[in-house]
Amino acid sequence: MKLLTIFIIPLLLVGCKNNVDKKESVRPVFYQTIDQTSASGTRNFAGISQAENEANLSFKVGGTLEKIHFKLGVPIKEGNIIAHLNSDDYKINYQKAAASKKNAQIQMENAKSSFNRIEKLFASNNASLSDFEKAKAQYESAKTVLKTAESQLKAAKNQLDYTKLIAPFLGSISKILAKENEMVGSGKPILIFSSNGNIEIKTQVPENVIKRVIIGQVAKISFTSIPNKTFKGTISEIGQSTGGASTFPLIISLSNTNNEILPGMACNIKLTFEKDLNAEKYIIIPVDAVSHDEAGDFVYILKNSNDKEYYIATRKNITLGRLTSNGYEVVNGLDNNEKIITAGLSFMYDGRKVRLLDN
Image 1 (cartoon, rainbow, N blue to C red):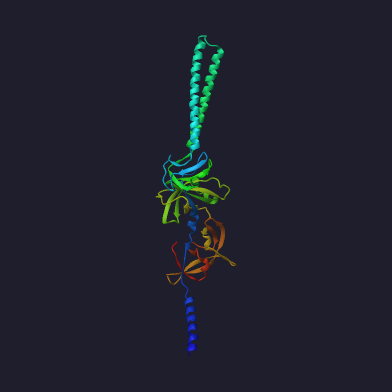
Image 2: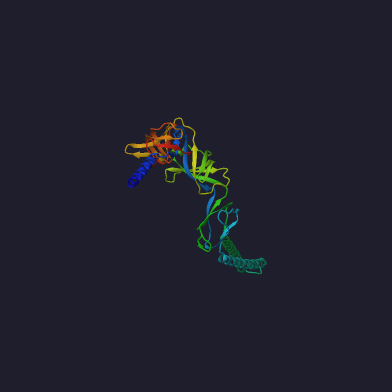
């Protein structure tokens, strides 16, 4: 009897487990409501934030990077020294040029004094013409030497000044590209300097959209890193060349950012266009909403159930058009106001119970 009991209990446990497995939980899903009209009037694009003014700063002369005076993100006023090179050699060159200029100045003054004296003697017939011409030539030569020395002094002063990296506008360092005590060449970028406060968005739009974009058009910007908040922007620049690609660049200026947005943050851009009554209407759905098998392309639409707490996932075949940057165009198979599942299709099947998640 004990042996019989030992064998029966495991069988009962297996049976109970199978009954539990059959009670599949209601799966939560993301969804989208089909709206043919809004699909033709609103488009979404990916973008990235950047400083309105940004520059790769470099020294005009080479040398050893001695000091970077500011850390990343610290506000720097226009005209402040951001970094400097070791300037010992440039100071020596400047001092040599200054000495040469001083010597040339003395030589010019002596030549001028001599010329003035000979000129007076020549006027009173107490000096020969050759003496006069020689004094004049020496004076002109001394003036030329002084002018050259002044130019060399100015060049040496410029070289010395070029050992200092000056902030071109109010901003901050967004990236440092060289280290202190490192040898750097002239023109090699040392750091990336970005303006403070003014942020803009850069994006790319296809050729069928660029024709409908205008300067001053309003855009709505949202960032995944700043949830539950939308920013307003206006289109400030429209690229007239694709640069070899099939898309055109757009620049969007932001307002009221409150320093929440930093350069390099990814975002979503929503552009709404006036309805064109003559334009062909179409529906665009996310790529992840479409499944494929031997029978063709299909989506799962949501059907009401007897229970208000869940829906029934129902397969529906569709005909796809072209693939756009926003998803697939649907030529046939979907109607306005239908709800489709947009994620988790690998766990989906016809007739499965699901509940909706907020998008």
